[in-house]
Length: 255
Image: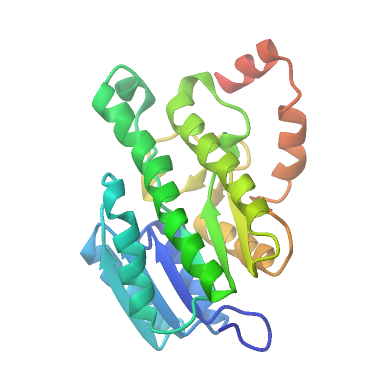
């Protein structure tokens, strides 16, 4: 359970080998998280992330393999990760995502379906099991990786931003459904982040690094905010973006 300072001690991270998840995990361990279970599809990268967690203070780490292209495995993956903790779960992080290639994927039925499956279907299936278990426990927090791209769909990236929009809005409703259960859900909406997933992608305004995102997450987890923006100024930027006339938005989004 959380320590006297409200900091999570037992943490499960799905998508635990991603650059952002690793940065968040290191911050959590430095803030006294001692049990960390990392789940993902690349054992070698998970092993590296587990070593990092130990270097930053974790005393117990373990890994779970899964592939987010197979939603049928979500409940079993969640069960395996929770069982490896062997105690109450304080925080579950879902950092599962696939950027894809809009130009290549938009006319490819298999690729388009894969992008939606990884970004929406698997996380939703996992959240159903996570919700059930945490509500039964009567406590716990969930952090779901969304994106600032979810707030208004970009025509030149509609597959990724549309998928994130679906997950984002579902989580808004899920967070409301958890009121009074002792469980809390927060959304992380970062701008473009410099990671191995975005190599070669042009850097728009407000692009940040994984470590900066992790710092914003730590501040956000200490708050009651539903949404953690990274950088925080995006809260105001996207308030305006929501209300831009469509022709102006399309002109800006295509740049």
